[in-house]
Length: 498
Image (tube, rainbow, N blue to C red; front, side, top):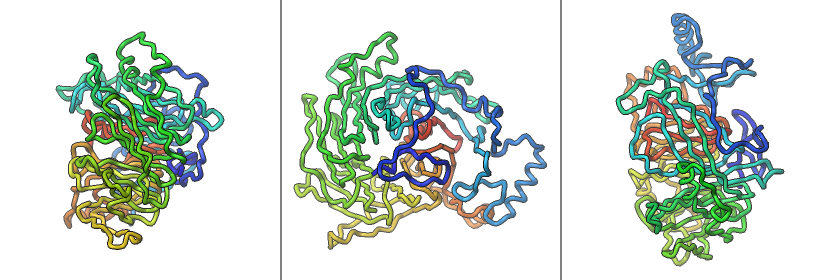
């Protein structure tokens, strides 16, 4: 299964199948590990392409407002209304964000595109809103096919992430720095892998080293079928200790899982097993569990969990039950399992889509809620309390979602609940967008009349962010409202909506 590989086309391009890989980004052969990145908007007016900027077009307010009013009189939205998946850009036109709608917005480039990444929790504080912000991430690269040996696990530090300037709509607060002009900085440490990393996840386990409270582990599922577990604690520490040299030994994996005979995209660490308990699923539909022992070693149970009739696309441990996990598959089902089962068969099987189910997200606030995203662009929310075992195992149940949206017209590539708000969901899709949704929104009759001019735009849609080749997104668990998304580049942003 390779639909998660980066698409080469622009908006509206379909998913790539059968291990197609995109062309590489145009980069230097040996980029520096540390680079200072310019603001993505600094040179936008030097381009010959036409730039469309919502709400900021240089015309007199009266002229612009008159055109907007006329556009809203047209059924389904007029020429002044850009609707994802409905409105087509003319040749040479591009979209640029309305910066007044962002609290923070930065774009950072890596030497090669990254299909997957994860955010690493740090010791800089919880619920922080001080700018410039700093965050730590891990990512896996997708080098050009003729340069597969260049693929690496990247340990990264993003710093100098400043807030938007006051004139762009951001108001200062007492707990924020006044340094609005700081340039974003990306520092990186690379661990050679030699194969495309399809999915990567980080986990922090208690450490026996008195000099550090925990060990940061990563699990990387690769195109080679191997899963590599690394300890990246030395790499993270090196960012704050100038002159530190990472040794070849520190770049070696702690463990290489060779149980899979096909590549995969599904991997997750259990949040309820501090030492480390890992699930991995592959394109043959098999799922394996690997457990870290008290001595620090890893043991993979060679008996796979079986039930899916096609590739396992995503997998997630329950946030509240230590032995339970859910998996999503291109067979259109989501299955719920118990690792204590001797049969290695699913406890529940639900047919939730007629197309591939690419991604799932288990709410940490309301643990009976599971969100899913499918290949047809639909995403939905399910109440697991309503799922019941089918009397006939060969005929999976077909539950009714408590909410579903088909706003996106391309495959859903990533979905994640807000870590603190049980009604907010972020979604990434193949239409080059990241959307934010508020499931608590309900329109009364009067509000429905006010929004009747724009069809097919659900009232729960809070925000649309343009992200070329959007592949994966994550909320930052310690910076409220901050999102990181990967595609052609990394976007780090925070909107005024959340």
